[in-house]
Image 1 (spheres, helix red, strand yellow):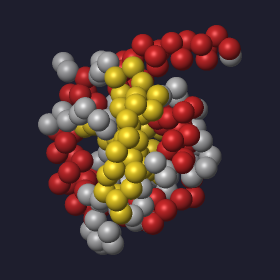
Image 2 (cartoon, rainbow, N blue to C red):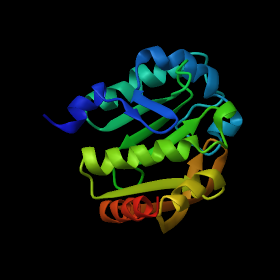
Image 3 (tube, rainbow, N blue to C red):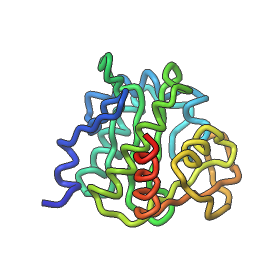
Image 4 (cartoon, rainbow, N blue to C red):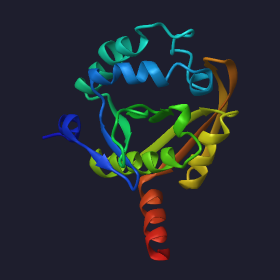
Length: 193
């Protein structure tokens, strides 16, 4: 069985989060926490803005879940483990050459280090479960919070360009880490603990 076939049933955990495959029932929570300027401004302009009232359901039904079924992407909803009351954000992994990981987090949970935890879990899944040799992340250069996550996780800045984001055309960066670099970094961190 291929790993992406069983990703639909996979649930992950970090110290403070539960990561579980996205489902159509997550659409109301996405609709509640996603369409805020501070959440979407640095996302690619394929996100409609202003966000339509049924945008989350359309995204789940027409984009994300079909990608998972085709084995092109893996979308994981984030829940706080202490109070798993519902989705607070999303981390996605996508096949491709330039942009393999994306995420968003609702405003009440930003700045707490939760996305750093989620991305570490997603990196493990990308390298260990799916077996990809390299992870690349494209981001708006102005997205300082996303940049800090890449820096903390040992990624290297390997490219520059421009892309169209919800907030307009902006300078863009590509960050990268290989499976070997990720595993070596994790081993060093474990040795320090």
